[in-house]
Image 1: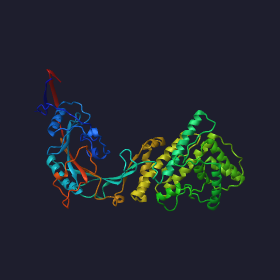
Image 2: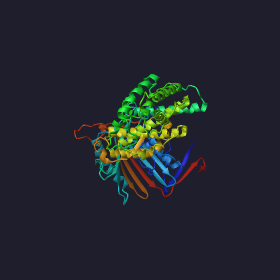
Image 3: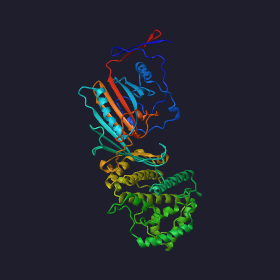
Image 4: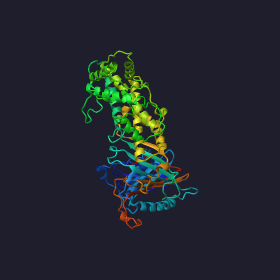
Length: 571
């Protein structure tokens, strides 16, 4: 079939370039789109793609054939929603590896992109080449009355994971700096916009707050067991998950363990009675890591409320019958006067109320069923861990009680219990972020306060529920920070740098992007660095960065008409 195509664009006839054209390859993770979007975002905002072998083996085209394909697509595609691109083999002198064209029919803008792999360069080479990029941009743009705007973005890795992306075994921390400047090689100024980005892996055993996370997970499991038991109206023995069971420790709580705890807490309660922290803000702030270690220590005298220690013991009961038996033993020992315990007067749980009344001698022994014992355990667990977070956030000075927004809940209303677990889950994620910022970035209390405020106000949408939190591998967190806090972390070697030069006019737009990264962004072998004429001070080519350049040319068409004649038919 012979197809004759006559095309008129602004009154200029374009020749037919449709002979023996073929297109192979797979869509890239970074399509180059219309200049209505920020070009630099296509480089740095998304993760580096892990290229598959079958993608790397796709055939590439010569630059001449690539341009023919783009010309043909540009003439005969009426409704484009994505850019059309082709991959070149990079063998030409321009070292082009990607060409693309995008046409916005509504606005009339046509954008053509060209990407060149510059080489595997040193930091010095990249900075020297940046000067050439400006000269090249000015020679291309030449838009009357248009100033060249330069936006530089640099990323510094503070803590990097050793795992594969998406399955990180560790948390990641990076700092993103952006600023406008007439200088192309200047160091980040103090007025640069700074954003810290963290990839948080919740529930790492190496985390200082791991014990709190285990307690939260147990409470979630107990709530699930309680909900199922109530739905089935079970009245017999209910198997219970354990805090340590299944994690290398198979010991379950027995009545002898309860007696030992009563004797231990009898001595501690009498010696330190009245010193329990219960929501009061201390006079001086303490480091977060130290406060978390206090909270998770089984021997800590910080929480002298007997009910808090009781939860950690009863959390390992094997079933509801065993749990009810242990609770009844506690009540009997207190009623007989053999155990003198300290229960904080502000503790609102039903177990705390029963113990206070038994110590006063104004209450008989209560009857406890299997389901009721599980409810009591969940209630004191929620109270205990709520006080843990309250103590940590308030004593460190990073948040106020109003910011924590801890709701009260009726243990008989499972919806209220789940909502409180959701809030506690968000506090756990925020705490993980603050611990990393304190230990890895040495942030001051004021900066930790800013991170806490930002996290507590934004995680409600990202961490919708505790159930969702259990399903995700990691959580991405971004927040603005002060450049003063980052000065000691910024080195001369960035992880990636993106310099964007922009010249905008009414009918023409030119953008040039120089992207340098320690990791390749395309599944192609960069040109040999020996082809480069740039050397560092020692005269030795140091291979540190993968460098590429994007040139984006846009023009607005006054008219655009397409005519296709194919075997006597026209469109």
